[in-house]
Image (spheres, rainbow, N blue to C red):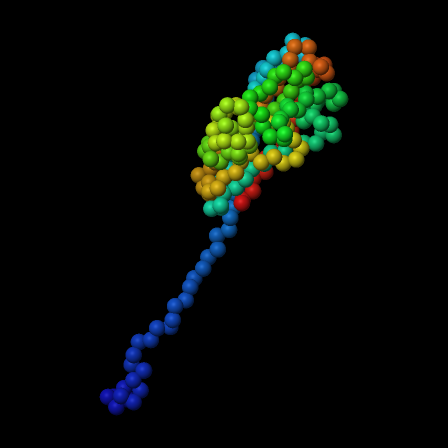
Length: 208
């Protein structure tokens, strides 16, 4: 036996096989854990003497993507320039709120002679909010870093408009709140007939 181990020394020694790896890919996933609910605006508005009505809805997005996600909103193409049409009188509409240079305005302007419909956005984490809905603290949106609910108001567009730009994962869920406002001035022009006026919107969340 002694002669065998002297002649073949490697047989009696422990050898490493060399390192090897075990890999498992986890794919990015994103979902609406809470979908935006239908909105019934608070307050019936008189078609002649006017007034203002408000409503809100929330959506919660969960994603494990470390780079975060974006969210856009787009309103249905009703073959007119206005998102909110009468359910019966399709030729009658509440006009789209006039935003400034296709970006939100600072404050909701009520000087228009027509009725108007617009929206504003806030987020559970202010850093998630798209720059369009941040303001300079005095007069301009889409500039600065100040976030104040109900300050920056946007027109409803048929093309997707980005409202959230989050740069980290949201495994515990990230909440977006969208506020809507309808303002009808005294004796609006064009006039509004008696009807229920409806706008349809779609939210789209995408991993970055």
